[in-house]
Length: 241
Ligand SMILES: NC(=O)c1ccc[n+]([C@@H]2O[C@H](COP(=O)([O-])OP(=O)(O)OC[C@H]3O[C@@H](n4cnc5c(N)ncnc54)[C@H](OP(=O)(O)O)[C@@H]3O)[C@@H](O)[C@H]2O)c1
Image 1 (cartoon, rainbow, N blue to C red):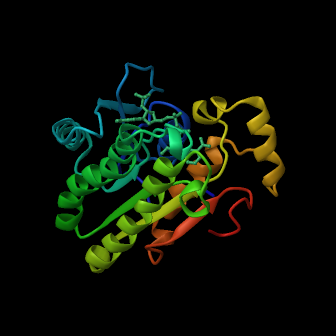
Image 2: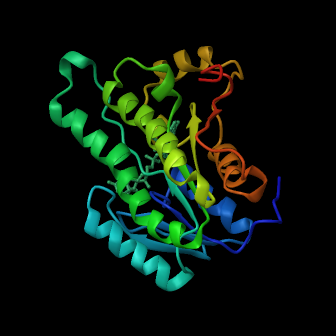
């Protein structure tokens, strides 16, 4: 699935120092794009990927990261809002801080980076925004009221953004992964992982690269007429939701 028509673009992925974000960065790099990722903690990045420090809960830090990327690669043409956290617990035990901190990172964090990226995209009259949601956003999951709310909220962002900026060559789409082998799923108990596995028609968890390939494609010229869509990458778990 190599797309040779779209290459050499300035791509920024938030939370790209590990997991799905790093796999997305490697996929764009292999496509010949200029790739930058944000990281919070110090990390080793593969050669060819520019790391910029940013915390998506802090507008000033987001702005500084974009300025650094713009200086090195030019205005961001492809933005992947991937940074995310979980603080799973049942409703009765969920504190207001458990709820708002997940919203602040996963939903408001996406708003902050999209707002910052939109300036350059509007000027260029082109752009790709890809929001990494979750099957949990559309399907729901016990213990994830905070996380599901943040992830379904990304659909509202993508659809309103499409209505605001769709006429300027900018698309915004949501990718909804199911269970992917990363640090996030490694935190689940073995019993929970086994239980989840029985619910996935594909009978397996996915590798991060399987999400990355879809992100790269939705950001390509081949997908120019798709916007406001939710694309599940979940082995059938959500049955299209
Ligand atoms: N793994 C799955 O099965 C799965 C399924 C569906 C959706 N997703 C979504 O996919 C995305 C990536 O997940 P993953 O499994 O790769 O997670 P991960 O391995 O836990 O990585 C999360 C990334 O987000 C970054 N991050 C967290 N809070 C941040 C903040 N305030 N500012 C900047 N960066 C921040 C982390 O940076 P640090 O390294 O500095 O902490 C890290 O790079 C998330 O949005 C997640 O909700 C994952």
